[in-house]
Image 1 (cartoon, rainbow, N blue to C red):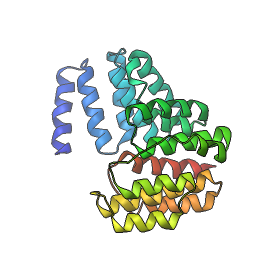
Image 2 (spheres, rainbow, N blue to C red; image 1 turned 30 degrees about the vertical axis):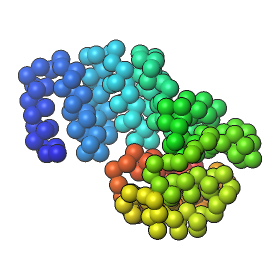
Image 3 (cartoon, rainbow, N blue to C red; image 1 turned 90 degrees about the horizontal axis):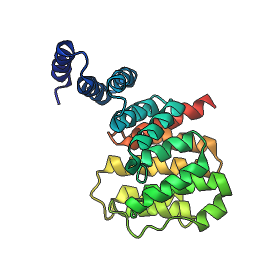
Image 4 (cartoon, helix red, strand yellow; image 1 turned 45 degrees about the horizontal axis):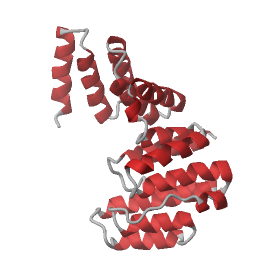
Length: 242
């Protein structure tokens, strides 16, 4: 976890062998961990030039592009990674998120349908399937086609979020269960992050942009290293542009 020393060592490796795709990829990983996404993209690009058949490199650059809110570039890289390694496609939920922000909602429905088959008890797959489907067919129809989740292993607060999108709970119910910690091993800040984050996404689905942004900004008050923290940051950036 000493990124400064790691960076020195990998730069020595690049100096020793400027044609090592692995060395550039490792520096990109270090820069990604340090949230230097623009520099990470540059390194992944160099690594891809040296190893253009690497699905993993396109996939990793696609994620760095997403975190820079460069949606078209992210999607192009994810698609290329799947072209090079088709088995990556079925469970690629990160691509599904990119499809949502690219406003390719029908493709998002298809992606989260296959992602759900790899993680059938993940509330988030079901919610993102709904979020995409609601843009295609409307909220009522999307609820009738909601993916089934028996029990998310993260506990009651995730299942209450699931009920919220089904129309069987209210935002205050989500906050109450997240506060209580009922049936969950997740720390309080994680529960509160997801509660506020998905209440924000619920308001977006219901067409209330103001409340959506308020809840998403509140979610940022509970920082964490989960991927969805970056999704929240990207969401706010993109919606502010609109």
